[in-house]
Length: 205
Ligand SMILES: C[S@@+](CC[C@H](N)C(=O)[O-])C[C@H]1O[C@@H](n2cnc3c(N)ncnc32)[C@H](O)[C@@H]1O
Image 1 (tube, rainbow, N blue to C red):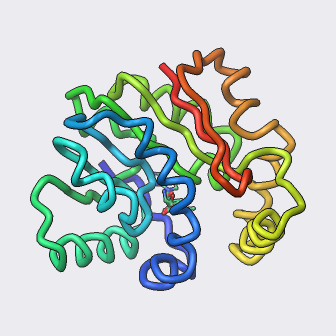
Image 2: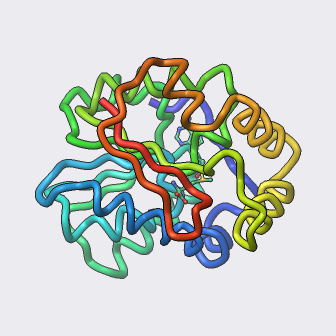
């Protein structure tokens, strides 16, 4: 079900070429937290870079995103690579349980929590609990270090637009992922940082 579409100026080819590759250090960690042969749904999958990486390992991998530009780009990448066990759907994650009744082993939420309004973060996680046994949440580690990567991250967030930057600031003030885990009393099963120490990844029940 799609209530709305969300589009940013950088969605599509620009995101895939200039932003998504920076998340590879995080994706390495997420991949190591998923066992072989599992069913995975990537929430806010962007242009599908993670889904394409997990396709070899997963039984089935579905990417959903509210940006039609990103989903169309991801579909193009899928057909170029001829991957069978992957699908990309234009959908709103806040209503995902209406679309998928079956339980996934993992719902991945990578760099989505910091960009959505603080009022809907718990709603999103509660929705994902209905469709997945485990949720892997990856996002900026708070506080962001003042290393090269930390400064780059802040700059990218600033240029992503006024609303996006204001959501990033409220994510930081609320303590990032750790703040959300505390607020929702989520049980952390596993946690990682990437090699640049600027992202924090948790697997929760
Ligand atoms: C910063 S990008 C992260 C993309 C990718 N997960 C990554 O790790 O690079 C956040 C994505 O979440 C998507 N998004 C935001 N709110 C959403 C919602 N309610 N439902 C589905 N996707 C959403 C945006 O369209 C965007 O593509």
